[in-house]
Length: 253
Image (tube, rainbow, N blue to C red; front, side, top):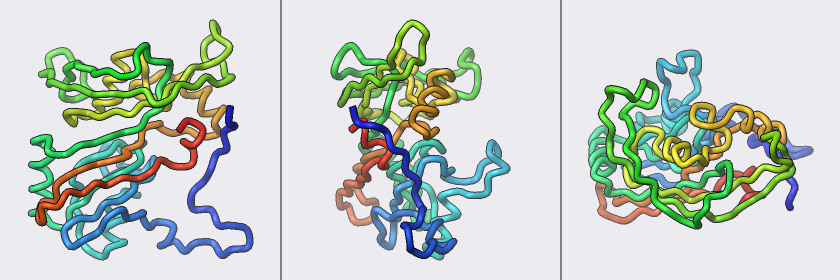
């Protein structure tokens, strides 16, 4: 089994000059034209400032706006802890067109995630309606159709006990493709089938998360937006936007 070596982005190599403040805040661009900007969002960065995290001033929207020197509009959301492909429109018109495409499911998304346990099958579909707002009690809320297709890519067993009944912990690397885009859909669906995402503070297991964070030397939500396919709203071209997960994922790929 390969050992886990934590990495830190933004660190200068020995003997090199430290990056400037602007360079260290710059977001990796996967695509840029006059209508769209697509970034590789790091885990832990908000998409935009919110009342929930009122104390947090750093966000992808403000960083990209300053980086490009122009207004930007997020076309969709990623949870703060999720890394990967994130699309911004460069005008309100394009933002509206992208919003319609997403609402009408004219896009295709693929995520990588690390979950607790080994699924009994190699692939499946989670078909489980979800309450509209996961932050509120589900009773009395409308429940919306939601399906997530998943495939098990790898199974791992690590020498860490996160349950007194077992000397080791089983983890699985999954590829997940949500049919809809309900809030926290993948996180809630994987909890529903008893395979919560490692590092998920809201839908996962606290003792498991703490033990694995200590073992890995890294605390994060192990969810990565790997690929997004969409039709360019202005040119009609098919865009296949993809970014590899960070170095911390290497032992599991």
